[in-house]
Structure formats: C-alpha cells, structure tokens
Image (cartoon, rainbow, N blue to C red; front, side, top):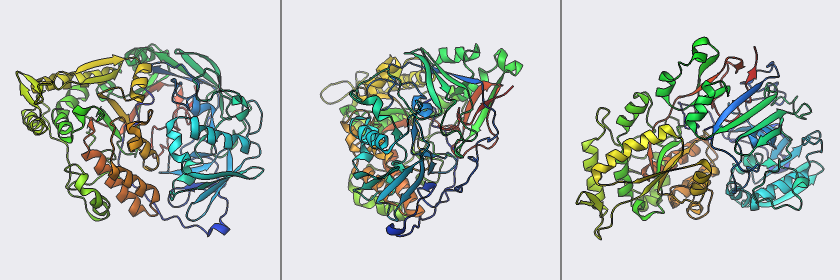
Length: 604
C-alpha cells in the first residue's frame, strides 16, 4: 500500500534560477547542491524547516502492509523486500529535502563539489560516518557500492552508471565521478545511491535474493523479522549521524514495525482493531463513510489530511503495447472512450476527486490545453510525422456521464475507432477481418478492493462493444513477477512524479524497457520523441528550457494513450493513533518518503 499512494497532487510554483558556478579550477566544496539555483538552507542550518527539532524520542509506530516479502535485499530485481528496509537502515552520500523541488544536503558526505558544466562531481565523506557495527564508512565502500549496483543491481541503477566515464579515489575521504555525457542531473543522482558495506558481501552473489540482514549506516537496524509476516526496526542508540542538522528532529521512534496481511481489506480491519497505529486511506468515499468505528468516535484515532504541491503522476489501467491488440493508438483511444470516468468517480468517490488529465497535470510542468506553442512546439516539431494525433494539436480526455454507467456518445466514438483499426462487432463479438475475437487479460493484485470495483464497472461497459476481458487477481509476489517481466495485457498502474523529473524518466518511458525486465515502462512504449524530451530535460540550464521540455514530454505521454487514467487527490488521508504527532509545517511534497515516519513522534 505504501508504494501505491504517491499519486496525489496540488498546484505548485517552481522558482528556479540558472546555476552559476566558478570555473572548474576554482570549484569549491558545498554543504548541498540544487538542480537549479542554490540550496535554500545555509551550511549551519539547525534542522529541516518541516522537522520539529525538539521532538521527543521514544515510542513506536506500527504499519499494516498488504502482501508479503521474501528477501532483505531491496537493490536487486529478484525477490520482494519489505518496505522501509532501505529507508531506515541504509544511507546515501547526500539526502533530499522534500521541501524543495530538487535539493540535496550532505549526509554521509560532508561536502559536494562540481564544476560549472557539471561534467564531474566529488564527494568528501564525513570522518565519523559509521556502519551499525561500528566500522567506518570508507571510499572503498562507496566505490564498491556504486559499481555493484550499476552492474548487477536493479535496472534502475544502470542508466546512470552507464554515464560514468571514471570513478576514482582522490583523497583519504574523497571520491570523484567523471561523466561521459552532458547531463546536469548526474551530479545530484550520484549522491543518492545507497552505500553498502563491501566486507559483508565479499564472496557472495549480490544479485541473488537473500534473507541476510544488510549492514547499513542508517538510524535503525533490523531487530527482528519473519518472512511474509513482519519486520521490526530498532533505533540505533549509537547512530553516528544523530546530531547532524539534517537529522535533528527526525527518526524519533524507538521502534518501527511493519506487519503484513493478505490484502488491503484485512489491513484496514487490523487498523480498526488497534493492531496498527497509522493507515493511509486511498478512497475519498471510504474516508467519509468507513471511519466511524469506536476508536475514531472516542478520539483514540485521529483523521488527518496532509496537503501537497506535487504533480498528479499517473494512475489507472495501463495497456501493454507489446500485445498486438494494443499496438494501434486508435484501439487505445477506443479503450479510453469506453471508460466512463464520471460514472466511475461518482460511484466510488461520490464524484469528489478530480481526474488526472496528464502525467504532470495540476502543476507548472503539466501540458497546456490546446496546440503546443513556443519552445514546446519547437521541441516536438522534428517528430511531428511520427507522433499520434493530438500530441502537437492538443489532446483531451473524453467527457463522460455521471448518471449512467454507459455513455452512448463515447461508445459510438469507440466503435468508430475500432472499425478504423480493423475491428468490428460480428454476432455480438468484437472481431477483426480474420474473425479473431478481441480478447485480453486484466491483471490485478489480490485484495485491491477499490481497483476491483473500477474494473468491474469497466468490464460491464466493454460488453456493449462485444469485448469480454478476463480478469485475473494474483498475490503480491506473482503480481510483481508478472509486471517485472511484462507478462500481462492490462494492469493497474501507478507512477508518482515529482517537481524535478530527470534521468528516472528514461527508466519509466525509455525504449530499453520494451525488452529489459524490471523497468517502469509497463506500456512498452518506444518513442524517440519521449527520449529526446528526457534528454532535453536533463540538459536544460534554465527554468524556461526545463519546463518546456517537461511539458513536451507530458504531451508525448498523454497523447500516446497508454493509460486509462483515473483520479488523483490533493491531500493524503492519514488516520493515526492520537499519540502520534507530526509538525505543523508541511513540506512542499506533503506526505512523501521522508515525512512519515521520519518527522513524526510519539507523545502522550
């Protein structure tokens, strides 16, 4: 559940400036680095602005999670690791502030240094940085971690590693990375790779799934676990970084526990029974109707709504274009036309939630309505002949009917689009000229009740087109395995997007993901235009160029018609035990990794 909620958004304003640095020979170490402009906080900042520096230490927080886990290595493709393992026990050279679009401050590294063109970056380790067993974090550990993750780790690490021309130790506590391509984001990304202990992995196959507890340098250690059932993290009393300004007011609980349940419904029931102390609710309707249990009525459980200022991201039913039935954009548009969002939203949310209109919608990075103009149009022009209709001219989702399950107008459009693509209704069944029925499978994760409700309504609508898909629900392990290998036709897809898109966009939408397992390119898109826009994003030197490139990418993604989008929320809905507290100051990203449980504390 925790990995699926990041599809909320609200409007944000980016205030970027062109980064101006001294010539390479005179580059100076800094306490932080920003994608554009300078870090908002000074070198001697006391704490993050959204942290309570005086928060008390102690107590525990318990989460309920749907699914299970069979590995303790979250950095490889094999196996399923528990949520929180990397966040609580493993650290990076730099750490991200979730109150700025993309700014990093020193964590394991005391400083970062780069040149004006960001062709290289150098980090200096803190002399007192330690792993949980007391051994020092060394440059050797850093270099081993980067090379190992970049060569045999999860595919998400390889794209950046391929852009490193040289990695070298330049001092007792210094490591430098020189890049082989122009990409201004790399200087930041190289500060965000997990640092593992080289000695722990000597003589072992890192790429193989394992239940060996990794030795990290973070504020917590794994205290106990049982595969598929629970994992408990205990705050390390000897944590080396407790007094850093970045950490002051964070990591306040003595214990963090994750209990695993069969599905989302059981997870919620466990919360209402007091088995867990915080629950993130994704359904607006359920938030209004199902939170009247005794603990809420007595005040033992508090309902909190956490606002955010991030893009919508994309959530909905993704169509796998590796399957020939979804290869034609007209078929995908017909599938979108057949989805009556207004009725679905009214049925499930009481009509309260706004629809996702594009991947970066409701933010300054989202595409504008109507034809592309200015720099956006210039970026897309070389690819005009190959882009689906609407990319440059303007694209909008169909209007639905909230009062009727079937919107006749949209179904007529869908029928016409199917006919153009060679599919017609014959004897009540959608078939092609060869008489082959239009069939596909919708893959869902077991226990995702709300998702199942959406699909049930959609399946009934498709019957009016002579289409009867197969709906298959599998457990979390099978769902991960099948989506990692793209063994599905249609599936429920969630991809959170930030105010600082960059190299990760290639993992999401790059052509390598058509065949390479484990990427986020579930739709199997192969778009030179998308890749060119991503390149423009990472090479941008100004706010204007960055925003234009992102808006252009948003057009390519949206008009590609790969996902049948549903809704987003402008707030995160967290129900929690009354003894749990969070700061009044909410960060820019709201309820995002780094907020709960990091900034929270326990108090009577």
